[in-house]
Image 1 (spheres, rainbow, N blue to C red):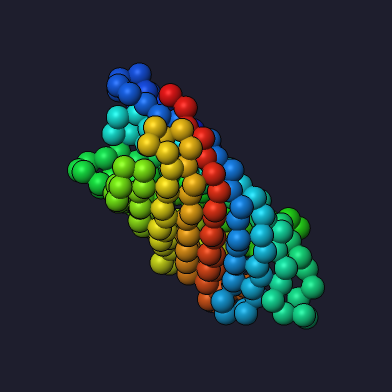
Image 2: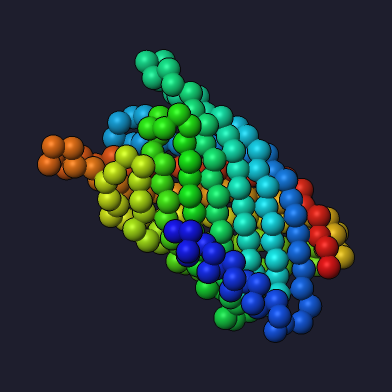
Length: 215
């Protein structure tokens, strides 16, 4: 996983040496998170904070996002609160107006361990971003998560994520307000004592924040 994320970062940096105009943004976000291990009816939600860094160079777009949230369980019988921290790296390349192919990786840490599943994955997908006005854009993305790895073991069948977002800012790009929603579903299976147990994981993240652009 580290080699993959490192390679994607190098790809983005390499692109900066051969392209023209570029834009870089830094942002801070408030985060609302829902995490649910479906078959166990083990769910929790909470709030937190996060940040984002974006680099656009010609057709290439590099994005790194991180968030940290404190979650409380839905059921009174499940008294363990936990903290979730997630890092997401994405690199996309525009292949047509408004359409880009995307690759990247993600890693989610849980504390205390095993209060929920830690997971790491590689993502392959596409993103469509369109300007709806000079100062506003909307985007939608989807990706398949390749061979997720879990802290508690097991494997995954279908694993996908979907996202949509919008940004509104100044005409010169120096300031932007960003709202985003992402949904992730991983059909995890575990095999305690050789028996298959299906424990799919669902996670939804809503973000809202501000970003500053530099040139």
